[in-house]
Image: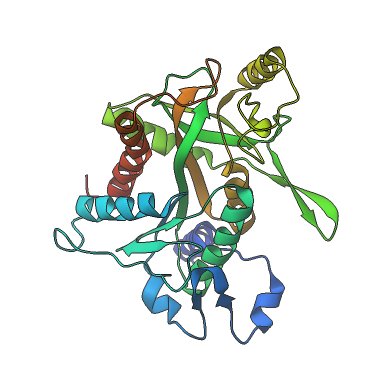
Length: 312
């Protein structure tokens, strides 16, 4: 083989490794049909390659309404469809999640918390696999509580850390604890940070994200129905988190990071901060201000997608 042929072979292997979606479940190949129950889709009922084979960006957030607004926004940014075009919910046969598509962009809701987003990710990753997609990026866009940041800042997650500030997700499998890495792709995070700087519209930072199991006690709040600790206890914990590099707190990043790592998909999490938790527990900004904050991750991701597609 010539040196050129050897180089091409190496390049081909590199490209294959970069683009492949690894689904680490040998049982799938023995299934006659794969029913993606919570998305109301399936290999026996839908032509998944025809419907979704062009997907390059999976953008997800908690709220169905927010995802519908995002798909309308990104379609306008990419000049897909006509002004006023409607984008139907592709999994309207279920009320668990909502899914919308505009060209290479898939936008879908994930609900609240790690169990909810894990179910969605299991099925959407299988969807991408069945559709023979390649070079896919998964991005969670959301809201969070900041630690030491001004409200409205957008945090791009470097590591999703647990309650002990370790970059790992504990998953119980067959009654045993399995620990999974929760580092997110550094190059993708840096690329998103550059996009934030180019926008010049709001503060954008990279930092660790504390991923918790609930909204109240797990996040050291004093305003839940149950609280067994003092305000001093709370402040000591939040300051320890800040010293460990934690910039914000939310409830899904650990699952996103772990599942992307296991399947070879490049993933990112970017959340806007609605308040500084070192100054209080309850959100006091007006509805109008909060709506503007919620648009910031979408604007950053929109800028990123346009750059990736050469639209800038």
